[in-house]
Image 1 (spheres, rainbow, N blue to C red):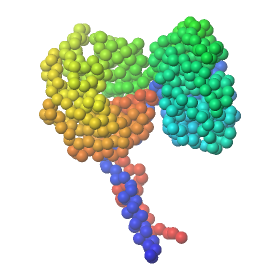
Image 2 (cartoon, rainbow, N blue to C red):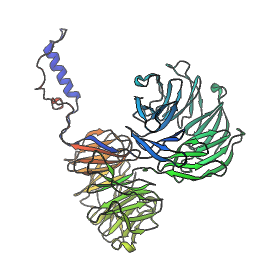
Image 3 (spheres, helix red, strand yellow):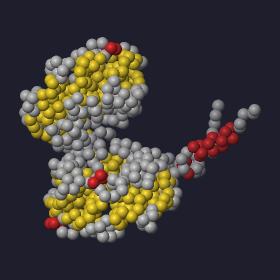
Length: 637
């Protein structure tokens, strides 16, 4: 066969390129604009008179001397939430999930200076350091071993795939122990750093964290408590004992005392002076979800996934007591906007008020509406400057005056009521209560809010949207329940629509209901006849759709760790998935204001995207097939 001439090769390559390149629509797309990078605390480390901890996507430096209660000293913004910390001399190693590992010089304790970084390829969760080598439990990326002798030129010795996500590591040379959740603990021989060799698997229920004490490995087993493993010979490792008194995310050993981060159980304290028979000494309710532990002198520091850092006096381990706290913004679950004030529901912390006049630089606008409960939902009435809060921890519905960000006050309250989703329309508040059904509150008189209607629908509602005389209850795998609320005292179920995926949230526009339907992606229903909803169109978005917001002919769907999906809905019968945009850790909810999309990020505070109309990646028109700016000839040898 004759060779193709050069010009025909160019034409053929051009045609193939056009076939392979995605043809982008002119619909709106997103560019990262800014962030308010605060969230749960999942890592903590003490060093001399200082405590270093993660606060969402920030590294916070606190002073803990002479007062053991942490006080703020400094912070450094990071590209992703902090998941673990390790220290050697004046170098702090920070695991930042999908952003890999970042190294800081802390010779000036108060002012960390970045000196290196490495993208591990997975999601860095746990760290262990020895002799210029950093061992990384890299989530889905497995076990990664790095050469960090020169922080400015970090390189990898090896990357080893694991059977489940690698969550933590511990060392006993020449062996490495890797916690793999339900797949237990794997033992690798790393005599050759470039080729780790699997030597043994230690069975556990759900291995989350690893701590070594000489020849004993303590495994924090989330569903199985604390396991003590004899690793005198790691290849023949065997269980010594099993303490089942708590869930376990992490542990810290001090002599014969073990402190266990027991997640919702606070902390458990156990005596292991007789390893074969661990003895419960005490437990202490820290009020939040404990994740990681550090200790200095007689104070235990507990990192919480929803409540900052708690200091606990353990001078007498059998009688721990509260020693103070440094409360940080918690899990960002919901948001609402009033002009340039953005209100975030932050779990145990309360409602945070941000000024977003400059969307690229969100800042605190006023006081935090603090709570001892758990704020799950927030709705704002811009015309009345009121925020409506659903506090699932205290089982209350609150109405707050937010006209003055520095002087927010409660206007009314109703309890007990525990709910998952909230909608407000006119003089009524509508609450989706999951297994407790659906309830309607009369809020016309804030001094005397009352319950006026209840319904036990055919499925458990997780969220609600109201339009006119109808409420639409999103009910997970049971789809959507349609309810006539024209008579609030007597809500009546009139229809339903079953979805294959999990219906998380919905938005009504005209005669259409747009659903964030989990793995189903975007589902659009015709609700012109509410009792008989019908499918108009649907499209998969490559992730699990949890929330949806509409902006003209564009829908934005929050997809947790998969980011935000952009869908063209100009033709509802044929919605077109355009692209997904990364930049979120765990997107939960979203709202559009002006040309900005604000996304509540469960683990990393608030992500802000600018909505732009020019989606070109290149400036030469390549996506559209416009080659006018390209050279018409090419040379080849």
